[in-house]
Amino acid sequence: MPINYPEKKVKMSTDAVIVAAGRGTRAGGDTPKQWRSIAGNRVIDWTLNTFRAVEEIRRIALVLHADDTSLIEPCEGLVVVAGGSERSDSVKRGLEALNGPNSPEYVLIHDAVRCCISIQAIKNIIHLLHHGDTHAVAPALPVSDALWREKDGLVAKIKKRDKLYRAQTPQAFRFKAILDAHRRYQGPAADDVGVAHAAGIKISMVEGSEDNIKITTPGDFERARRILHNGVDIRAGTGFDVHRFCKGTAVLICGMEIPFNRSLEGHSDADVGMHAITDAIYGAIAEGDIGRHFPPSDPKWKGADSRVFLDHAKSLAMERGYAISNIDVTIICEMPKIAPHAKSMIIAISEMLGIETSRVSVKATTSEGLGFTGTGEGIAAQAIAMLVRQ
Image (tube, rainbow, N blue to C red; front, side, top):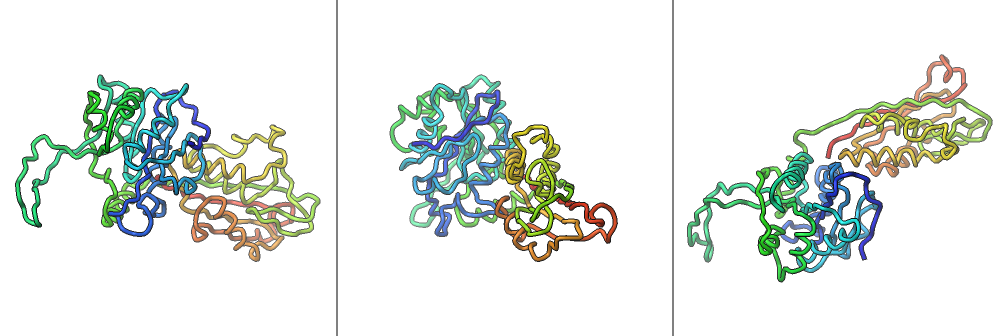
């Protein structure tokens, strides 16, 4: 049975099927290629995050090998489906998972191992499908190299390359047409254009991209890494927060409770460090601050765990196609001493954000007896978050 998560609320009735059920033996290694890491993220995560950043896409059916369904975290608008023995079987299962009373008008079908696909390329294909006069659109590149046939390790025949194209994904279709085509199709298929063509569906070609490579062999991993590192979109955000002291026996900072002769006062749990980090992430994606998303005037957030705020900021960043590269937070206070707890804070933050501890910095300083922190009236924190477009 498919595992369903809530869908995103968007006007465009366009969904996507991402196929990742293969074992990828030609790529080498003990791990299927879609689960291997490139430039700090798994191949499948690069692909998923790009599609999630396309606002026109409402839902994604992610088709995985039955043994892999536990390897993906739940997220909004995701349907996880166990694949079949052939690619065409897996695509059909993904399409069936999207079918029903809320089925889309259009669907994009993409190979997860084409992790270098760009947001703009996806948007271009969707636009052509919505406004074109065909039922399908597929990206392709003309064959520019000479073509040979081989026999016993020797060149056996030269083939003409005129009007030959290299197929890419995502391949986009009117949903009902491609679902019906898959239901009637028999046998394996190299791609969904093959299934559609057999059903008599008219397919328009759009220019593909040399960067939209399909990871197939070991050398493709390095090529993909170079592509993903080009044209990097980096964003920085800052956050600052202050909480006054009140009666209590401990303070909560960066997810760690530190015994102290006072506590921090606030509408939520008053975690000054996590609030600064959360605002830094919001700032990097131009989404305001905690108060905008979780107003203190709403009693629902009284005493709320700051992890709720941080999770929301992280999710918004991911939806826009950004990964959190690193976090640097400074705690400003005379007491309590932060240094003995800094390592535990780093671990807590890295676990909450899903990044390595080497990408998290927690440090402390005093204000030399000056200002409200210097006179012991409260604690301040400032943070910087660096986000990188995936």
